[in-house]
Image 1 (cartoon, rainbow, N blue to C red):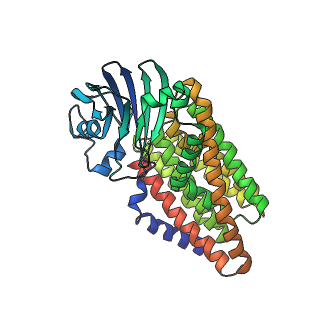
Image 2 (image 1 turned 90 degrees about the vertical axis):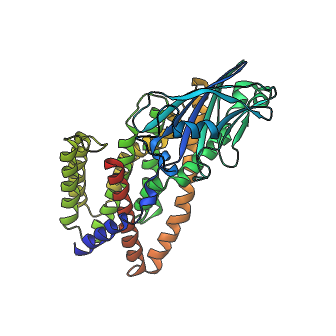
Image 3 (image 1 turned 135 degrees about the vertical axis):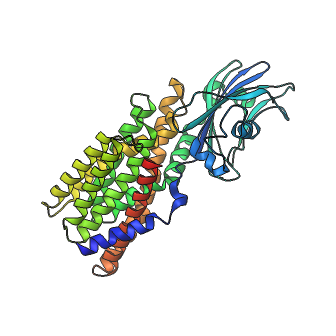
Length: 404
């Protein structure tokens, strides 16, 4: 019990040393309605992204303000080699909580192939993804992911190459997007690693990965198809909670299964539910209260079994449902046309799975080898230290996302 408490204290200390990890995936979105003389532009960007550029979300996001000016100069439409000029002042539009939304119009005086180009955030976040959607001007809706490696999209050439279907991001492109998403999704990878730290066999690993995969595939599909749209801020906070809970469970199993860890988790969550009842944080009191009951019951069940593999797989499934909503954020915000949903959803999910399996294939054999060659010293030490570090990260992500 003392060792488990020490591990969690160490993890809490780590939580205070990683402020740079608070950002989730760096993304922004634009929609372009083309016509003969130019285009009408609509741009959405998370307020959190603006902190990378030292903008103040409370003062700089109004019509014609610094944020609007930045977006209008870093997101452009070209006709040939000539940028299309903005006409009038970019105006702020109604936006969901945590987002900024702007609209403006551009006029193209030159002729030639049109191209959308994005330099949004690339100077401070080279991994930033900008999702551009284009419609009108004689072609159907199509979309493209713009990156540092490919910041431009020539629209007329894409249309001539095969119409609206060929102009958008391909299936291979969505597979690559899913792979990049999981590779940069440190919170999702931390959850998988926390599950692997105590996995004792290939069969157990297969059970954990399968449960997690099935669950997040279900909610990813539901969210992208628009059947369920949970609050994004609450989802991101709960992802952090899932990481901290599984890592705390590891510490408890390694430390002797005393009462201190279950009590701390259940009472701490119940305390946060009480604060949430007064309007504090992004996660509602009923959700937090339910998590407190869930955590208490889960630890009680774990304490009654000698081989907890099935219960851990059940937890992987339950929290996999939450992680699926986190995966879905990228595609759901793109508002894809119906004809593009199936290849985008299939490709993105396949990319996520391939990336996840690659991580498991690299990490678990190494963990198993350490546990096999040094079962009394290095094996437990790696599992304990890893669980403590991951618990700290999970706590940090949960608290900053829920209360920030």
